[in-house]
Image 1 (cartoon, rainbow, N blue to C red):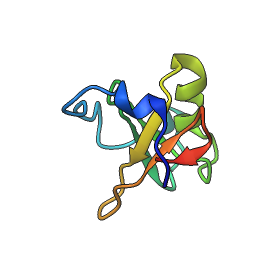
Image 2 (cartoon, helix red, strand yellow):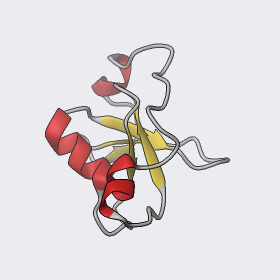
Image 3 (cartoon, helix red, strand yellow):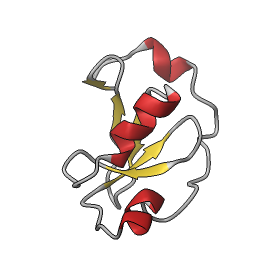
Length: 86
């Protein structure tokens, strides 16, 4: 894992999740494969292994660069801008 300048700008404490699952998947009637939590705003989106890739779509729409796994037992973070685990 590496450090990136985007992690220093994240709110502390991290935002509360806006939902328990990907709301866009619920609306679309699809099942998310893995969930990601936006560390800027708390949006929960599905990963790129899911059919509609809502976490990545959230990054492109919002510009929020860092998400973490929202799966039980996982705590890794991904920076979309740097393309790296942080």
